[in-house]
Each structure stands twice: as structure tokens, then as C-alpha cells.
Amino acid sequence: MKFRIDRDALADAVAWTARTLPARPPVPVLAGMHLAAGDRLTLSAFDYEVSAQVSADIDTEEPGSALVSGRLLAEISRSLPPQPVEVTTDGAKVMLRCGSAKFTLLTMPVEDYPTLPEMPPAAGAVGSDEFAAAVSQVAIAAGRDDTIPMLTGVRVEIEGETVTLASTDRYRLAVRELHWKPERPDFSAVALVPAKTLADTAKSLTSGAEVKIALAAQGVGGAGEGMIGFEGGGRRTTSRLLDGDFVKYRSLLPSEYAGLADIPTGQFIEAVKRVSLVAERNTPVRLSFRQGEVVLEAGTGDEAQAVEALEATLEGDDIDIAFNPGFLLDGLAAIGSDTARLSFTTPTKPAVLTGKPPQEGETPGYRYLIMPVRLSG
View (cartoon, rainbow, N blue to C red):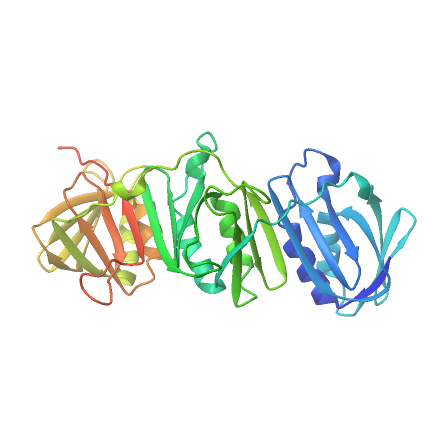
């Protein structure tokens, strides 16, 4: 194997592929990155759960393949001087030359490297920036507790031209709807994707205009079953799906509300941050909504206390409600609107945080349901 490649192209491709390398590989070869040089260079990494593959332009003298330490290759390619890189194999070694720098890496047995999973059938495409934003809005509500794997995922529901993403950790629920271009107008599928993998993937595929999603249709087996694939900007990744029945989340969203309040988002975020400075661990921020204002409070009589009032527009009766400040801030940061709308039924039932819809009566594309903390006394 012998080829030349632009230094930045190599560093970028290696860094992206290295994201998939397992921190503690179950077998030594999974710490490797597979290099295959033909008309183009293809780099691959796989940890039995997630696979990553990227291709880059090269000038090939001799085609071939090699398996080298992925982390070491990532560190080396990141630190090379800004000159073309020449990569050659010599027996059980791979040599990188860049300017006056020369590195020699030991290879691992290519024949022991597992075959990457097949991509499922192509299902459709969505704008990469919109997809990344939607996934980040929803992934914040996914659980972190691996003992309940189902809650660590994002449910992806596809019905025709609508994709619905949902996640919950039992204390909050995030739901986002977006339009996409399906391969078939009647396409429908459901998948539960690990939230961290989905968030990392969506963020890393914004170099191309679109992300293609590959997923087997509901009730259809065959290639790629139990997998979801994403492709964009010359990068391709697959992930194994999570098993388990996701909660029936639509029944958790209230169908009607007793009242709603609109608050300027930026001011609300800053006020919650200030007031929660005195909130001891796991203690809530209390919100008292009255006509024309909301009063934020934290702390108790025996400890430090904080109070701040903000202008707010209230429709409905006065209400006192309390939330975990971290969960509230996550939702406020995700709504993507200058005005935060909090819709509630009672002080002990879930409230829904959204941006202010462009037209009254419209269902917002993003909804963040948050459980209140019960106030004593």
C-alpha cells in the first residue's frame, strides 16, 4: 500500500472515525482503525455496536489495506505539519512521512478485523443542520442510567413525511417533530437509538447539506435489521438499536391546560441561574405566577435565600409551581425561541415548555414536558 493525501483531509477523516473506537476494547483488534487504499482511501472503525466509515481523495501508487492503532493514528495525524502525507506499508509496519517528520506504526492482523455491518435500506433524507438541532433538543431528556437501557434511547418514529423524536428519563420528556423526504410516501418505521450515539452522529454529519437515514420499514426483516444507518458528507455510520418498549409518551402530554405564561427566554434563563445559586442539591426553584409577573425563589428560612421578579404574561389563574432548576434550564436552552411559553394544569401535574408558536392554536414542533417538584406545606 502506498498513497499520498492532503494533511487536513487525513486528520479530519481519522478524527471523525476515531470517535467510534471503544475506550476499553473487548478484543485488541477493535482498538484498530482499518485503512483501505484504492481509488479513494476508506477508513473504518467498529465496536460491535457502532460502526463508522469515511472516504477521502488520495493519489494511489499501490492499493492495499492495513490495521493500525486508531488512537495513535489520530494523535499523529492531528500533530503533523501542514504538508502532504505519504503513507506506505513495509511488511508489518505502516510508515507516515510528512515534511521532515516520519512515523512508523505497527500493524495488527487485518484478517482478524470484523466485517462492518451492512447498511439497512435507504429510507429518506433530512437537512443536516435541522436534524442536528432536533436531535440535540431531544437527547437532553434521555436517561443516563444504563440499568434501564430503554430510557437511554431516543425513539425515532417515521410516518410518511413526518419524523418524530422523543426521549424521557421519567422526570421530563422531550418531543420534536420535523419534516423529511422519504424514499416512499407511505414509509413507516419505529426505532430506539442510543441517545449519545444519535447526538454525536447528528452533530458530526453537518458538513454535507443532507443526512440520509437508512432503516428497515416496520415489519420488514432482511439486511440491516436491528440497525439504523446515517450517511452525509462522505461519512457513513451505523448503530445497533436498543430493545424494549418505549413508554406511551403521547398519553403523558396534556390535551388541555388551565393556564399559560409567556416569559422572555433570555431573562428567564439568567434569573433561574441566579436564583438557583442558593438551591441546595435536589432542591427546587419555586415559580409564583401572578398577573403581569413571575416571582422566582429558592432556599429556605434556615439557609441562603434568593428572590427575583420578572415580567410575564399570564392567561388563567395564579399558580405556584416548582421545578428542578437543571431540568428547567435544559428545556429553556433547547426551545430555540425568544419567548418561553409554560403551559400548566395544576401545581402537581406536568407542565409543558415550548417556544411561542407563530400562530395561536398551532402545536409547536418542540415540546418539553417537565414534572414539577411537590411543595411541602
